[in-house]
Image: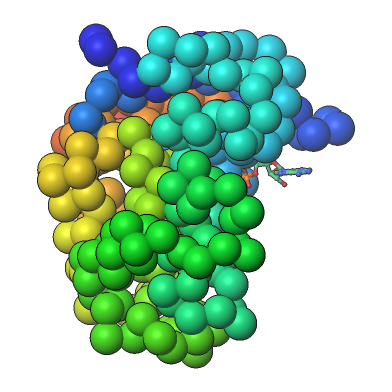
Length: 248
Ligand code: ADP
Ligand code: MG
């Protein structure tokens, strides 16, 4: 397999809680993979380990041929690996276009950062990605006045400003209405197909992840329970059992 991201035997604990236990997962370049599992099974922790938010206790993370498990977040981001958050992190006091402009790579903004005029190329890219996200008409509106779902689309577009090779998305459809859920799925698939962004998506909604991913990895109690095609994972008795147990 031509893995863009390889997670090899990653473990992470918080005090007595083993949040990630010896997890091994590979994500092929150009693919869309899903990461599922009941609440508290360690999904967000694994994202944090991959992008450098937490130092791992043991194991290796390799992105695009480079070992990253000891690197800090900004360095990993510069390699082209970014994540979005379960709770959105847009700047509510700024307009959509400003949120996009500040998300541009420092190199594109030129020296002096925000104190200088934003280069026209950055603004053009910002506008075209807002168009892609369905937010162009709202570009001058304050991000804080957007619905939660629109903020999630904005956060996604902000990540695309950096032209990542790979995006990790933490529950991109959680808490948004069904119309926007379909819009989000559509945009994720287009970012993958048209911009070549490899995706690893944490998703709670089984229907959504079945429509999105070609491979799914399921965590339970911090460990990897199953990896396979959506069909394989959906019919895996261990996966069904983990979800039913969690629902009880
Ligand atoms: P998920 O995203 O699958 O719902 P998390 O990765 O958020 O699960 O959490 C996995 C486990 O690790 C939970 O028991 C959670 O309480 C614990 N945990 C996560 N982050 C921290 C932290 N920063 N400090 C202490 N415990 C944490
Ligand atoms: Mg989580």
